[in-house]
Length: 42
Image (tube, rainbow, N blue to C red):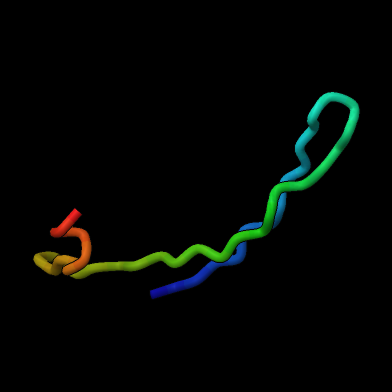
């Protein structure tokens, strides 16, 4: 599992300028034939 930090982006709502929230994303790498258990129930 690798994690990356996503920086906030600038957004405009009419005249006002704001930013989106920063996020932390997880990247999961699986070997061939491996499955994630929690995805099967969705």
